[in-house]
Length: 546
RNA sequence: GGCCCCGUCGUCUAGAGGCCUAGGACACGGCCCUUUCAAGGCCGCGACACGGGUUCGAAUCCCGUCGGGGUCACCA
Image (cartoon, rainbow, N blue to C red; front, top):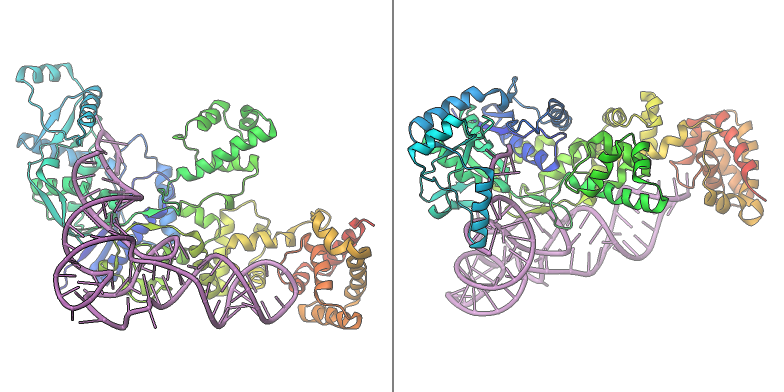
């Protein structure tokens, strides 16, 4: 029997899934699925940081993973916060064997040691500091807070990385005694990750390159606990196009800049803005001043609404952001897979099944990759073009479910299907949404673009408006209200009058949509219906100045 | 700054000593199609970071320089 491949994704719950995390999850998932029945993909929630972890954040994380279709094989999710007893038992035995010890340094002392290291231009290395028995007893009787540190055996630590190659690690002079249990009694990431991976039988660990040096700590722990060493593969990091790190804070930054601009331009006070967005004014002002503070999703959308910043103006960072802007999960996944991995040769467009079949750690690259949204957009366009009508309707409904403000939420499945068909060639579902909204507006509420009216209808002695009048008569007399019949009638008119089709189509477009851009006009008219079409033409003609 | 990783078109990459006057995709530019916006078709622009070696021969191997990134938490 082939030996099993067990991979895992072990995020800490901080809300919706970051694209970097999504790629890590994808690679781990692909590796497991590539091994078919012998492969398992496990999910574990690393919530040892009690202050940061919330139930809602976990739910959001799971929502994104499900949307991507990266299903995990363990029915029961593993929460590290619920396993303290397991970790403590092991830590206590480590202490009794002299392999770990309690350390009583205060934060101030540690900071001082770090500063000293910095002054001497060397790395800060914590090694066990001998304190007398007497002082130890005094600390204990005082109940002074302490951490537990692992007494890392001092030697070279080297391991073979499946991505970066053999001989990774550090020399003996870089090893240090890291914390394995925090003063609040929770294990640190380094400890919990090693114990859990061993207990869950994880054989292959794919994670970001920022973890490369952590591996040394993990190996040292594995040796002390007689755990097998899994295969490690450290993935290149995904960066912004400008080379900065892709961070949730990018969205806050964009909003913050826009808010500042808005406040200075509109001459409104921060507290006005805060009130309009139903935020506390101290919350808003604190956030404006401190770039480390972050808004949550509902605060973000309230604020952007107030200052007129659109969702599509913000950089997508989280999987949820892409979903909200109308990307298809298969396109995101295909694009993400190619950020750091490729099957060799010129192969780019792949289905999930193809990726599963072709995936191998050997195809993972070593250098960091920049996230180019333009390419993702092209992938999405192709994925949408390749999707079946049913698939697109389902995707559109998913999009609408998290964009509740869209009037398209009133559309039936059949109507959505028609709209999607009209918009064939679209790039994003958001584009379909925004370009089809006029179909759901009230006839007497439609907004007209002044430039469009001027250019298409008023110019040249109201030529466009005159054409509209003619066309109105033709349309009202039409016996069959269907796309072919409308098209035929208009074409006949165009030939009679020796006009270009544009001279008729554009006025019509403006009249029913309010702008010079819309889905194909004849199909739009059919969709709107005769009554609406005529009402809009009448109202529009009346709006054209002399 | 110490330690560590990386370095092919603007971007993602193919390339594992001769197949490379370096291939593909996206972006960009031009043309075509066209009732708008897209989509689509065709053509084009465009890179082996630099300097030394090794070799008959290097994008591919070695060294150095430069550049980018990671890490130096009681966060993961």
